[in-house]
Image 1: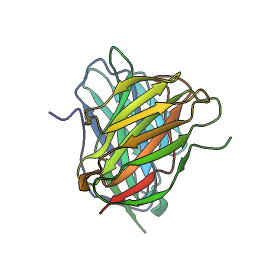
Image 2: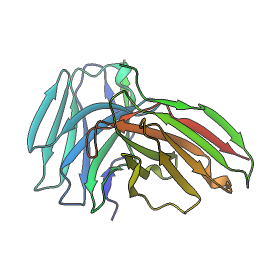
Image 3: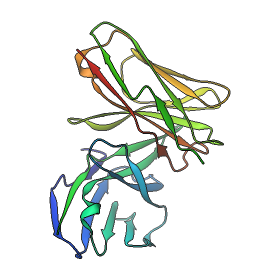
Length: 113
Length: 112
């Protein structure tokens, strides 16, 4: 079983709609969760971090975390064509010696005008 | 604040050669992590450094190594390059271990 799983997409939504991106993880002791956006040919850019169960909102973005279900999601309201990118879910996994971010393979989002 | 910087941005090497990549973290950040990104495998963790010590290592062969200097700058080295090492190598910095990581622009390595 992959440690962090995402639907690869592409997820296509019309401009102005809500885009819903989902992620599941396997390590129950994971404590911190992140969403990064990556445009083609660029490096990942942090969108949101979330640490506690529930919702966290930042502008048009809302991250949702459910540790019991091992599920993280990202909602993008009023989607814009500039939101078209790959969205990476990352889970911070602690070991005896340190931390490592485990990434899903990303969901490709296409917002059509 | 200036972001994470990586040099060089692009590299072309041939099989068997070695390569050194450099990363300067955000000012004040003491932890540096390295990742390899390929279309097939996605983003994979290579190693994490804090206070000049490697704190964690991913599942990569010993040809991949790194180090961190007292000013928190980091380098990674890949020896005896293979075609499969062609990838985008990303450095990320954070204030401390386990904190939110911010990525640099990456170094695109092509092995011929």
